[in-house]
Image 1: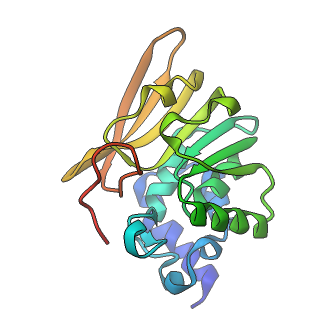
Image 2: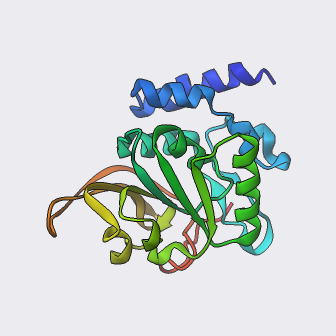
Length: 221
């Protein structure tokens, strides 16, 4: 496989058509080595428009989201270089790597200890020093690192817990895939000043349920 050609094709054929047009996001996707965050058994899927399984057996729902979904969520956060970001659902660490490339500091929470260790190793090999992996249940967020300019949930939830929303700064953004099969929606929440909130639905998709975030999704690989 010509890796650079495959990366170019992924950006031009999958990501741009999904209205990901921010030059900084596209440039980052052109540099980021997604293939280094994909399990060896599924390396051939690194640039394919599909979810990539990260574990077998009981934890088989853990995955890397489709490249176009990762890219669109990243763009919608509108990150700035000094932003503090929280991710829930580290997986392989690739989304954390993208977030780190656009912001100042990232804390990423992963409930699965093995995945947490693997993500740490992946980020270390990629020489990413501004992303910290924490082996923890992300349902209540990580208050000690907040408040955050942005939060991303890298998996689906029945609804966004209030505890997570309250860890956003005024003007902060949170993206999550919300709902249940057959239709889930990627949604952008924005915190106003005081207790004001707004949200906009971005696109329909499906994603495996984050553990402890509602009834388990029936979606299976």
